[in-house]
Length: 143
Image (tube, rainbow, N blue to C red; front, side, top):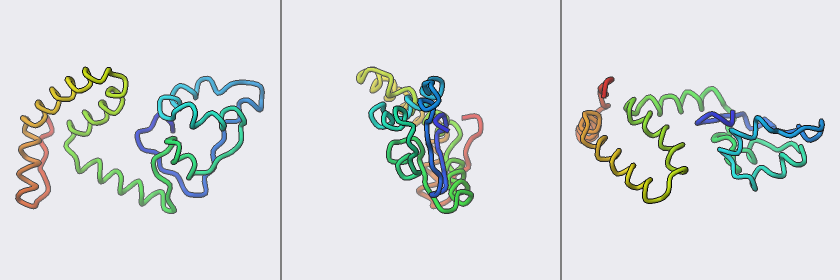
């Protein structure tokens, strides 16, 4: 779950990282968790093995959505992702991981180049035309 872009759980779900209670460390799972959640926000859970609820999991960044209707929330999120242009979604997914790892100036340079490229492409033209014309865009699958 820590490797997912979007994590949806029922409000009743609880979490626990109980490895310390059996004499080991949460070593392998720490890799995706600590890429998603700042160490100070997850430290107590990892050091104590104490359970925490879905609301806390969302507040620390482990998951993105807490709901009473997981299926409906997933359907809504999928529809939202599918409403975007394929390349725009793929580039956004990539930049969510890349940008935080780059020095500030390099991040601005690389994102300016990406923005210029995407804004000059067919999906941007179609998206803006669809917005003006109050219709759904017809994305170009190879854009």
